[in-house]
Length: 617
Image 1 (cartoon, rainbow, N blue to C red):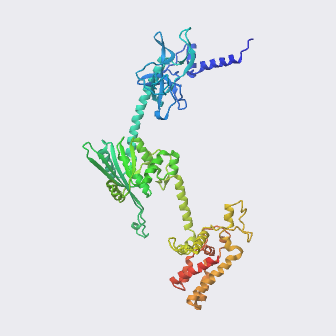
Image 2: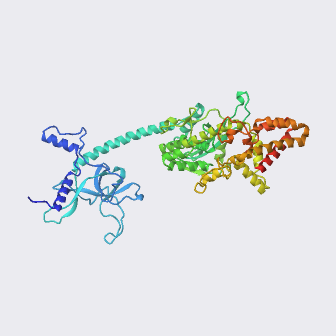
Image 3: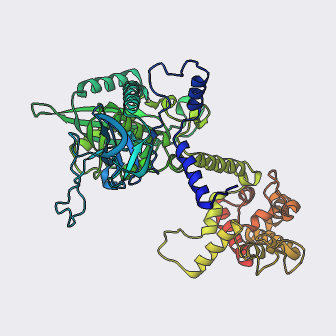
């Protein structure tokens, strides 16, 4: 038995691959069964050959020499990619045109370079000795990358005559008639679908522009009148401005009309356009907008309103005095979608602005101008914005039209903030409410306490090292930032292996423990009581000693809270001597001293006593 060599085996496998390459699987099997069993051949209703093996080319497959086929001017063109696509080609692919070789007037599967074609384009190449002009001599054409389909071919060396020299030629796997019918029908269907999609898309864009904003009746009528008046014009100059009225807080009373005022935002827009008679006309609008009061948010609303009234395919230059808004729009447009919603505030307004520009095919140029520089358009927009802020009704975004699966809401109101900012604000408010509701927080005279901690104003021109040290010590003590062993262990665990107090070797050494360790807190308590008694005796004499001693020893703030001393957190804890150690002044001390001395003397004695306690610590 003759054995096959390795070379023969590789040749056999290659031939099998060549036979199977491009062969349709399911349709091929159906066709074989139909011929073998003499049944009806499988065909499509529209006559398109479903066994055709062309397909849309991918970006990775766009290489030099790749065989492709496409339609141009209702003609099917075969060829090879002439060169690798370049950035300056703007998605245009250069194709070397190939045609079917004719034999006895009939086209064959063999492809050869085209020698001339009415759709041929002149293409430059590198100059050489054989090509001084630098122009490609073969027939060259081009098309968009989206129009290309892969053309399956086989390449081999062959000749039309037995004695002639064999040349490397490409053979297509599709007969010309089959290829023409397939691509022609496919192109017609594709164009019909594109027209239908374009019509549907245009209708959707019009509905989006019409319904993206909820406006009160009077404002909606003004917007509609402006849109009708400028729909036949194409170029505009627009000035936008905002007005932010945060409102003044009033004292809460039983009168419901005297409640706290909320901030208001107003926007103003001025549009200039030139008619055929070279006369310049203008349209203006001023209104109130919804949302959390913010200067950037109000300016974005003004830009959104200007884009909403513009006609489709318009060119506009928008003048704004807010560089932050202009830069934010540019950055939001260039960032990925996930980053947009995580990072930026006002993401809904940004999304509406970007969609209006894209859906209406607007060409917008943003220009920064100086505020209150005497520019007429900007001054008019500013007056319109101030007048709009006084209106009762306001504009709102129709969030149902936005491409968002989830909207962030609080109390049935959409929050135009990223989720990270919402959670941060909620946590901060929750912590502030918990802290404000603590009993010891309510019992603290914060105004007098901060006057004692800071000593002098931060803006004071006269400073000293002593004032600096006292201020630093007081702030660190209040915020548990003294350089204790627990803090050192947290920052440098390799150097400070534990946080146990080196004096008692029992408890954790923190900003409070250094004053209560080894009963030092009792010493501070006795000194504090004695100083209050001596200060009152110095002013009122010995007659008030018994009274002030009785009052001061029976009050709750002078007692040492054992649980607080053990570092156990209890929100129901009252003000105790532990808080006095932290330089906090109780309101009860002020009320107690008023029973014996006047207000001015109370303030002087309180400062004197706490300064001495501060020096003792």
